[in-house]
Image 1 (cartoon, rainbow, N blue to C red):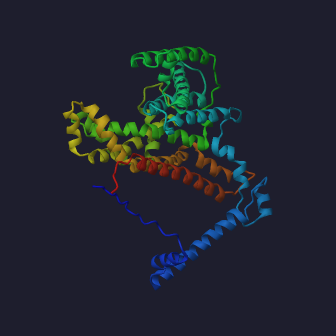
Image 2 (cartoon, rainbow, N blue to C red; image 1 turned 120 degrees about the vertical axis):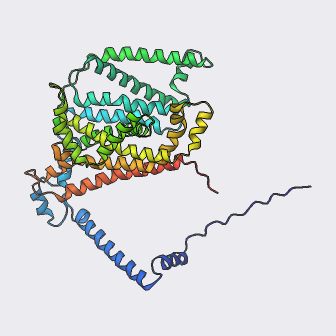
Image 3 (tube, rainbow, N blue to C red; image 1 turned 180 degrees about the horizontal axis):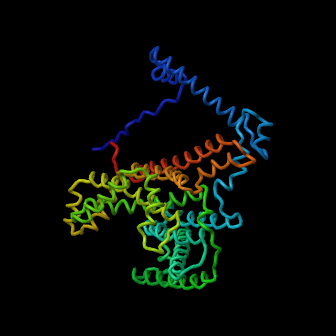
Length: 442
């Protein structure tokens, strides 16, 4: 008997026509007299706002001028964006020495090169790359930005960071071209393509050791002039504080969340106390305590600069908020997941790291990214305690003798800058949600 399979016909969407558009507008915008009036009033308000912004910010704006007085001569009612362009270096770099700006640019380029493999589909070992970014890149960036004398510990960590940067770059290039990892490629060079995994690991370790020795000998003669933290500022300082806060908030929050759920009374009480203490006060209070009270509790002769104190305060504050987010994610995981891990012979840390925590973090991606966005915006509070962040530099434009009184345009520019950064973080979190989603559509 012949079996005939009939393909199910799927109805294709009809092309958008004038009738369908009018029907949609009538249903959603003009379904009643009240809705019609509300639609007309709303459209009129939007028209007035957009027209005003267009005329002030684009049509009548001044883009090239040498002073605010010259802007007034060209256009009285338009925005004076010339002051923003004149202060762009200060907005992005603060008071950092202009002849040393290459250090900041090189640090940003190094971070981009370090993190590019995380978004390349053919590159392997992305977890290891992410861990090296969090734990080793700060030493490279810290020396680039601050400079000064290098101790033995700093030389070792700086060398390790450069070795990882070189290895990650080679690893990503090889992954893109061949789809293999760096250890596999090195093994193939020594005619051991089918070699044992142990031999691959030994060849890779030998490669890292050789690189470490060569780079360590090279960096010993590499000496950068010291740049005081008081010269740091602008968007660069905002990224430093927010970047360190974001990188430390998630692992710190995970540790505090696990401690709060621990069966050990001492760990549970300690973590709960820290979380509740920092969540019960505003960030500005924590910043003031870190810069005024913290030095009083330190031993005599132990001195931390204000920037380090602020970074520690920001990290602790946001780790406590992330801890509650992670704890909420852990509570969404059914108890059967823990029991399944124990059934197959996994211990507590294996069950938590391989089964429970990945699911909890995936469920809490919007909340975690929301905390990171709040952290980025809260970095503007450091201007109150004397740090020259991007908000301070924007406010300083209006105090400059050449651009005296220019206040609205810098704040509008800052608002657009923060909107772009926060919007990009929000869209990326949505991308992660879709990419990691395991739901099934019927």
